[in-house]
Length: 305
Image 1 (tube, rainbow, N blue to C red):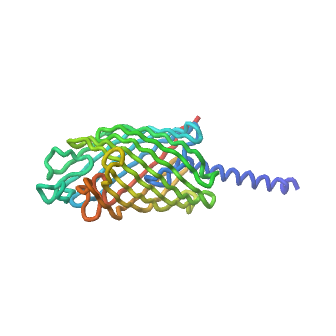
Image 2 (tube, rainbow, N blue to C red; image 1 turned 90 degrees about the horizontal axis):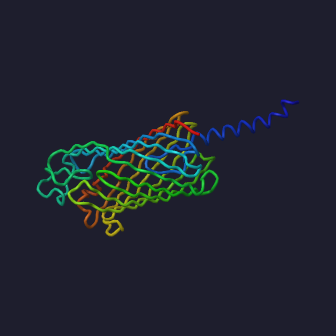
Image 3 (cartoon, rainbow, N blue to C red; image 1 turned 135 degrees about the vertical axis):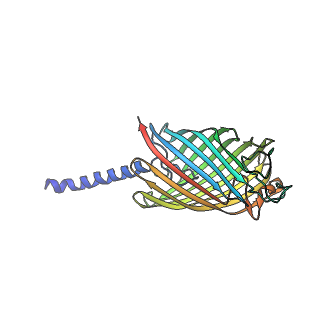
């Protein structure tokens, strides 16, 4: 009789333990590549995260832009996460442009983000270096686990040799089906000061990042991630210069002590306007964009209070 009476309690306790384990395993993880979610580090917990962001293929020749970020995240409170990054960049370009506005003396030239303007336009360019550092603050105003819509604010300043940036985001997220299905949207604004060319280039950017991810097995999630990108000349969105659309699949795996996310997105189409037309060719946007982009992220929790 005693064991029968205790059975409901045991079932309730086990269910609560499994729920807690599920929530804990998801805390701080990222089911998307570029899209920021509201799954933050719990108060007092740390995580190391390594990102490899590879942009590949432009109008012609060869082009590879690698952005590698080593990050330490810390849960300042349960709803505020802070982080610091060290950024490494690599640029490998060779005759990757065809637009006559850029290649005014040759059918092909080497150009684009990170390639200095005062050099032989037909020679290959290869450069790898530590490019600077970034800081990050995320404030989760409402939690998608307990609210119909999770809302958060994100800010990230960057100081680098190639460019300085100030990025802000409005984060929106809703969870469904006992948090197995995640729908998220980021509204991103960024001010950029590019310093690699002979002249300083001042840009502003507004992006809409969106994604859907579904946990189809205890350790696996998969989904779709997209980006609608717009660029403007000047810090105050003075003149529209570019628009491009990207989309692709994302897959996430979580083990007990680490996790990994792989996301690929393809540029569907691009359009350039006004002074930005030099970075367009045959319906695609170049500059620091490519036809394909791959993100690999690895996270390792390593300590807590």
